[in-house]
Amino acid sequence: MGLAARKCEPCREAVSPMSREVAEELLRETPGWELEESATKLRRTIRFRNFSQAMEFARKVGDLAEGEGHHPDISVGWGYCTVVFQTHKIHGLHGNDFIMAAKVNTLIP
Image (tube, rainbow, N blue to C red; front, side, top):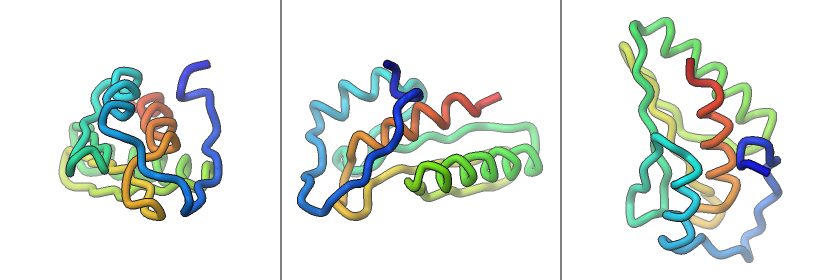
């Protein structure tokens, strides 16, 4: 089953952040995303023709995140929307971050 078809699972504080090696493996399944800050964050910037399209996309990402219970940091400006995932509870990356990245990819026009 692909990442986009999976559901996020509750993350407990006892869970450790994934290693860079595991994150790099999962990155292959989430085209367009980049690891940042010593592989503790996952980031993608999507370009649009105007501010309205970027805002519409950000709203779709927000709705998706609310439904999954896993929320990114979203930045919007004229012609772009940047989405950053990190599991704040563990201060690093978790499988949920890559599941959400794959789901966000399905929203890109």
